[in-house]
Structures are given as C-alpha cells and as structure tokens.
Image (tube, rainbow, N blue to C red):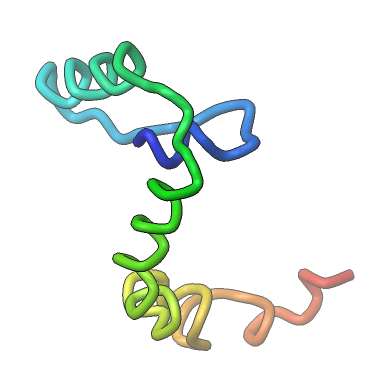
Length: 76
C-alpha cells in the first residue's frame, strides 16, 4: 500500500472484507512516509519479472478478457 500512496493519485481503493483488512489499511496510512529512490528501485527489482511477463494482469497482456479486441467500438 505504501507504494500506491507514493504514486501521483488522488485515491487508493483497497479491498476490505473484514476488520483486520481495515486495520491493516489504517496502519499503512498512519505509518506512510514518502518512498526514496532506493526503496522504489528495490520494489521495481522485486516485481520486474512478473511485470514483464504480465503474469498477474492478464487483462492487460492477453485477448482472453472482454477488451477492445472483442469490442472495437469501445475505441469510438
């Protein structure tokens, strides 16, 4: 969550299914400090392989999901 808070966004939406999830999110907000260059570089290094393969975001890297490949009219 700290990485999300470091991005230039107005809102970070998290999934909360129970009180524990809410407590975790609140603690992340309370403990947040801007991430430095070294911290960001470490995050990028840890996620590089998954990001380049699209392993966790199939909707971005495949035509399996309901996207513009199936509905070109979405593009106007």
